[in-house]
Length: 449
Image 1 (cartoon, rainbow, N blue to C red):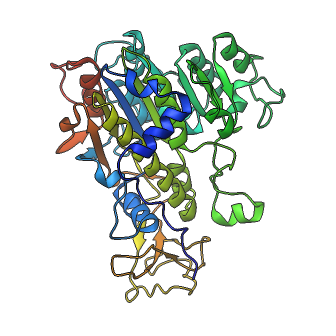
Image 2 (cartoon, rainbow, N blue to C red; image 1 turned 180 degrees about the vertical axis):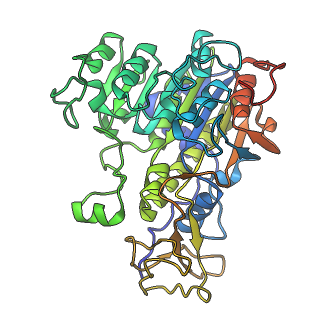
Image 3 (cartoon, rainbow, N blue to C red; image 1 turned 45 degrees about the vertical axis):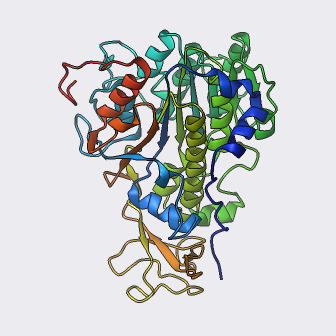
């Protein structure tokens, strides 16, 4: 009977994760961080339905994810200044600056410079850096992806990866981990994962080394960093660390969903936290799992479930860190509901049967995915408390981002401010309060420019 790989159960307690952190970059990292700090996690495209599918597909209907255990929760509203549904770059800009912007914005308001809710002409991450905090960005996609990129770069066009990469390096955060090596190297210059594509001749890897960065390219190199590492640039793929194409395409090309030599978002986060936690004035870390968005928008259910499992593993890493460092806020949300996913699990209505290939579409015309894509057998969940295993299918409403059911969840310092219904501009406010202990602009009407 085809099924998902047995789910990795959420860790209980923090001991194992704490030991892992300590062995990566030294036990002192766990004890040093005392100042207020913030972790912002953005599992892109993950609405409530997506988390529900990951729960059922990963640990089964009666068990709980790390995400389920986050104690504070709010409903998220994410409209833009000119659209009801968010874009990845526009939504990320709102999170970084705390004000509404045009949907087509990357660290700006369209093509105009942007003033943050605090009155500063910089993102919250840059303001934290200016105040003496250590800062870092982690992404399973290219590091120029907006979920992390807009916190360090501002450009009129999202497609200007070369300029985004240049600004990220010149911002000099302590930690830069993700994909996108090709945007750091001149056109035709061979890198570890492929050739560069920069047309300006700049070698940003060489520039990073000039600035004192250790440069790593694989999971093994990342985890072998010396304990006294202060700055690291990790480039783990030419583009993304995953292959965001439909299941059928990946099968034809013989490609796995994720590059086997690249670290997971959880592993990158563990290393980032170990480096940043040594800074006595605190830190801000922005993390994105991009595969959850890209696999959903490719209508690749198997890839999406794997990306969601990885996102939840990262949540577990962050919970463990906050439990060991209670002056840290960990807050997470998405800005869209990629693909409009629905889980179909009825064995009577709809006729989902284990070992029986699914139809290409449900009676309403929605595309259906099984284990290997369209027209294949359904997934089978891990057992419930009675030991039963149930088949299910994934239906898609869209090949793009939708404005679906999205939650904000949090743990740690100031997490009790996450409640009720929160506008996307409120994410910035909660993080600002946790970092600086004051409202960024108490007189500004919520959501105003």
